[in-house]
Image 1 (tube, helix red, strand yellow):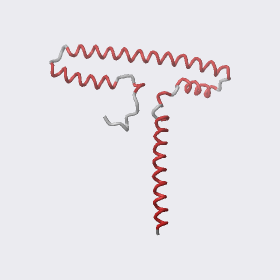
Image 2 (cartoon, rainbow, N blue to C red):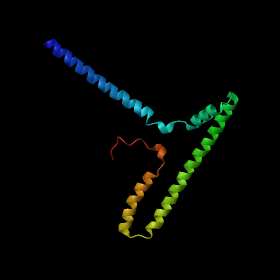
Image 3 (cartoon, rainbow, N blue to C red):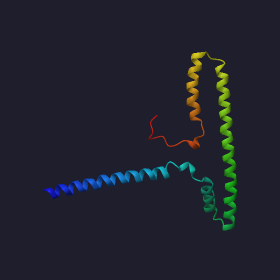
Image 4 (cartoon, rainbow, N blue to C red):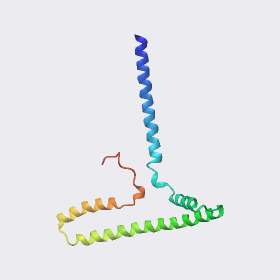
Length: 134
């Protein structure tokens, strides 16, 4: 009887340890793969897709990679400038709105402004929120 209890407790212990190690390993994998999806170099993915579709030679592939990388960098810079310009425009809009409202309305507008500005911030720094509570 004592040996069967030992086997059962041993089995339960091994299962608990396995579950704990599996949870930690799975969580680290999720952090590495899912949370860092935005950090993938899209220019190389696009270039490789174009190379595959066109059956490009090695010389053509090198030039395609260079062209796509340069143009994607330009697009990235323009997008960043566009977000900054939109943010400034929204700040001006809220300032103009304040001139038309009373104090209670301004207070409500400030709350809404914080929500909107949070929504329109640079999304590159945003992390996956499905498991966080706010």
